[in-house]
Image (cartoon, rainbow, N blue to C red; front, top):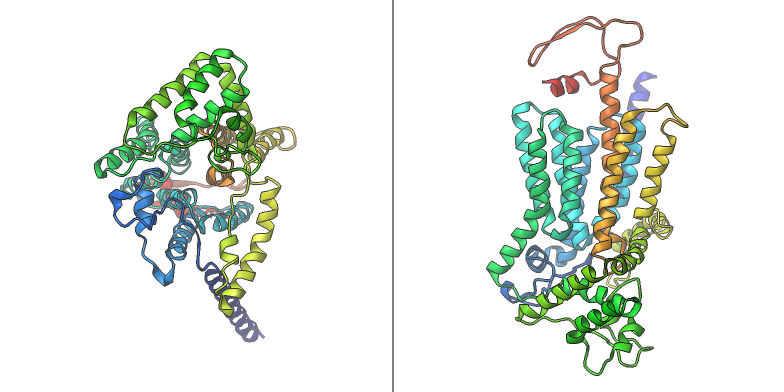
Length: 491
């Protein structure tokens, strides 16, 4: 009987592995030919002829990634999925609480459909997760290897920030918070501040230096924000001086055969793109044009006028930013897979993979439409945790502390994306939303494990003596505790 059950178990495991292999195979094949390609400029042969609107790394990676399997988008998408999966697996190994592991699987599933897109936000997110995963390994290695992993994770995070240097301060805060979760007693406050400052500002400075060194063609991506804010203050402003400055700011960028009325007719609160595109309902559109010449003084003057608008009447500027902040709170449509499903040159295997992807994507698409992955929903979950702590469940101080850090990530993301707001696709905020959930799970797991490790087993007395690496005396076994794990942490 036992022999039969053993044989049956082996058969069940083999069947499961076969099914899992086929599942992964269909999913991967279904991803072909890939989706994304933002900022690649692959039609431009030489690097120095490309535009710098996405920084130095995007046209370098996207522009010259090899056409493996006949599609560079497909190949790079697979690399992103691999980086993301490795990082999540490393983090998962530290989770000892079953319910937290289940939540972590859900986040992993959502993230897969995000990182399969070859866009800056998804690429950087996959690299960030790999960096956090490497950082999490410091929990299980000897102290002499911990700094190697910390430096390696720092370098990985630093590279990820090059895809969107302007948002690096958010990742700097996230990195330091994870550093405290994984290695709180080993890293001093001065080192944490060094990591915080360097990750916040050095990617931006290094990006500008490298762009100047290779002399890429200037695109002045920042002018989109300045023109959008100026247009809103011109059309919606109340102060006459502010409106006058806004009009002067927009004048050099007014499109030929257009007028100021076209600016207000084209302006809409959800994105700036309508100001530079032809609209059938606006006869003199597009209203504005961007500058891409070599004269940096023109964009410098635009920056100065934008600053004047803010300092002349900061309250009106804050009013338009309140409108932007509402957009940021409910951003959605972070998952864009339609080009994969609409590819007409399909094999039978690829068609089957498309069906699988469509079925798996359906619940995510529904939740995305319901704004479940938005900053607003994440903020409500944080409030929910605060309300439950001490009212529904027994009060625990660490829950409030972890939730406070959770709020810091969300509020910083909200603040920075509001200030920089030019459009409302959910992919701008989703990476930091998912990172905040991963932080919450990791911090909760770390605290619960520490409580469990040093808790007496009911009335039994556990006596042990620790030397540098070895346990010399143990009267009663610790139940449900990975002793080697905690001894290495105490080392």
